[in-house]
Image (tube, rainbow, N blue to C red):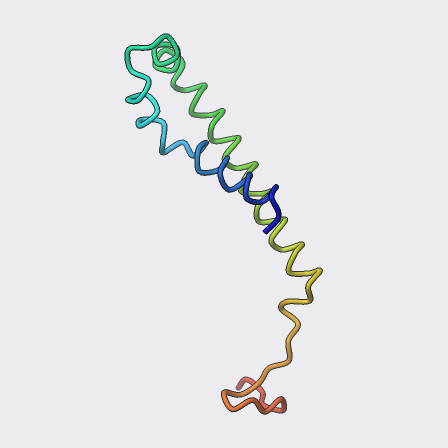
Length: 88
């Protein structure tokens, strides 16, 4: 996976809205924690948007990488390796 894909995975993990309670707990008692507590809905929607955009980028880059490498176009083979085997 290219470095942009790795960066997108990290961004998706950090921006996942399910991590908001951990973020609020970790920033408790700080000015940023107070601001996040006051604007929880906006922060949750913003994090969800970033999370979804990162996931879309990840899936697009993975499918683009598979298409360029020719993955998914292999001929069906049986467990022994005969190429004439077909799924029934």
